Image 1 (cartoon, one colour):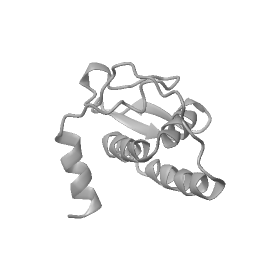
Image 2: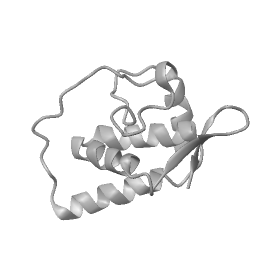
Image 3: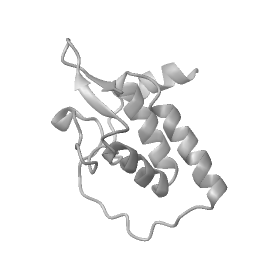
Image 4: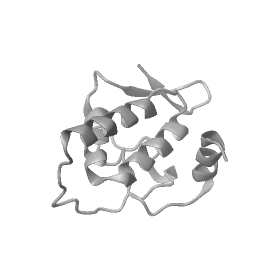
Length: 115
């Protein structure tokens, strides 16, 4: 199964995993329609990985932002956040940086990444 078909399968599966957009400055654009959990959780005691691992995490995370399909991007970011709690914090840092990325609704009412 290739990456695209595995991401498409993940889009339809319900999840109890915490939404990476939930605690960003903008919040989750999908709201009640989001397939990821919006329940509160505690992330106390997150350890910071060594520099080489942090760099690899950041490179993988930045690759997730390359496409403009919001749903595919969200699944890719969720996958990275699931790998390590520190990655979730890095993702939220990027999402909170308004000069880095923002989202707009397209003509069909779907959210898209706007650079």
